[in-house]
Length: 475
Image 1 (cartoon, one colour):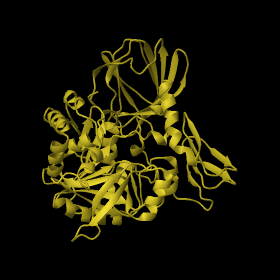
Image 2 (spheres, helix red, strand yellow):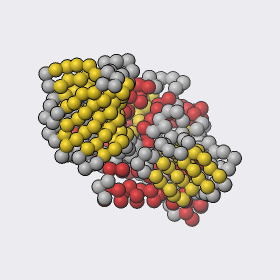
Image 3 (cartoon, helix red, strand yellow):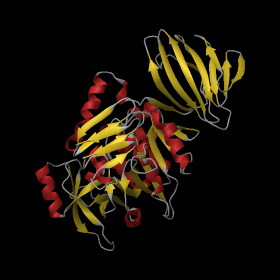
Image 4 (cartoon, one colour):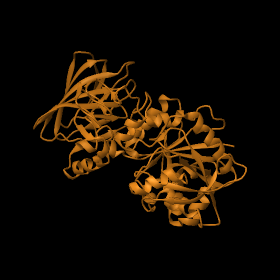
């Protein structure tokens, strides 16, 4: 038996703003351990036999960060599928099934979940894989720890003989109101819908062809016309754009439960493993390590007479006095203060930022690129100052700007600079100047990160004022 992990890493995690943003979403953040949530999703499979390197599906903007994070946990291969446009989870899984071997058992996992009890999770996978080998479409139901209105539910059916805990699926239930959720929790017939699945690649492809033929055709066309690009597999954008958008649940799973299709069979394995989708700040508080006052603290924080709160400091000293049931999240360019019972409404702030065309919903002050990162530290009407870090062996594209000149000051390491037809080195405490309209490139051929200050000046300083002539990263 071959288990092929499939990690869905396409979400934006807007309800965990301001830490999670569109260009740096929650699955790429280290929220509950030293590893990012994507890395935790990969490493919790260690020790299971017959597990391939994971296939990861992500969008174009995140590709280099995903690749780097996989390398950091020694899980990198040519296994990252890039979605040119978002089409929900069913098409994403379809692309992975086309890439996998037909007899492989797909283990489908979102990249942003917390699993506290890894042995219990692995035991559930083992049972579910036996069901999948018998052509079941399997999902995992989470034993509720209380009434929850933010999750969908699954109603359990009859026990499936010869399996320790597997049951048939009676039905999927939409997110309930509080009174209904309380009834579900006390009845023991309902479990939370985890969004984790197992099935043979061939069975999934048959189900999609049966229930969603237009999706099957669009995915197959985009896959056939796709091509490998170093670590990434790029599907054909035009073909994939015609793909209907749908979730795994709606496209297939809800149609093969209860009185659904007799052509396919489904099952649920109950899972009690300290699961959370960490969808809102209160969920992160719930899974976090608490002090005697019930506070979860991260970063440089001082609290007095404060309890049952979540305090995260990313850049500065955070002081909380006389608080209860409160969330405070501090970043370089935004601060969130919320009652823990109202954190679902964080998405309203993100919607407002979008309406106002502000950049805080999209990116942090520090922006990551395949070559390193840059951070804006000051700006005015005709100037901007950035702190730039270039990783060892990395290089920016050969480029030119129509509206701005740049002054570079190296503060650490050695820069190899291309300026039109000349190439030279700039070392610590030295500087150089790039006039408007000059072709230029910045490289770090050293063994340590290159750190420099860039002062931009000109009539327009937007990131779209860039003409690339050569780029090792294919941008």
